[in-house]
Image (tube, rainbow, N blue to C red; front, side, top):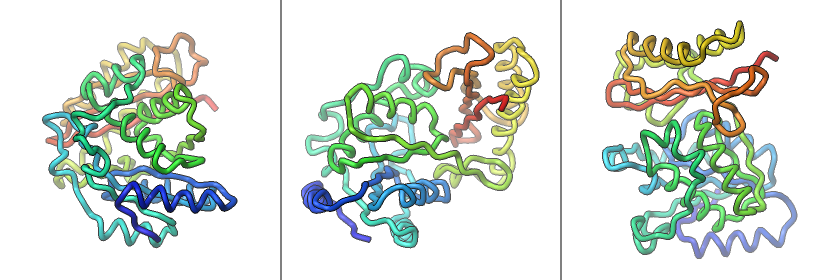
Length: 284
């Protein structure tokens, strides 16, 4: 596996690839890789002849009171895992390489209002513009045929798909199902922040989402009441919930009919750790 840290070297390497046949798949990450990330890499390996992974902790997608400076960095372990997974190229730029004038002065790619301002956007107002900006830059640098994202960050996945469509980027976006621990907790780099007592409580978030899904499948209940009950369930378990919301899968709008594809999304604080998760609602 080749490791590259500069945009100039990356572009030269990609240019050589473009003289060869076959697809290039790209997996963007912020490092501290776990089994969920590796599932994305394996999927990329299955669908393309060349696999590029990036590790870049993007300051633009962190708020003032968030964990940018303390975000876990595990480069040696990550490099070993990616080599074992047969990735072809790892791009690991520093902040100055990605944002020559500094993140605060860079041109931004603004996420669409209807998707960026709800749910996560209510609690992290600058987050998705940071995501779309860095992903657009990485797409321009790597020019992949396919990019692979996980469904755990469901809202992010929809925003990336919309960006690609709106900006006419010739890139296919592939989604991979959330990877979970044996007790149901969605795998996340931030799970390492949980103390033992919090880790024992954390799976209740997923269980609460399953409870909401089951209620929706059994009948057509008052959705507002179901969401409020789920929030109370999380409080009783020790969380500080920010939202539990039933939305349309297609665009995160409010469902209007029972036969629309729906997803239940939630975010909650557990101690100082913010956890997000989602479960799709389906009768098939």
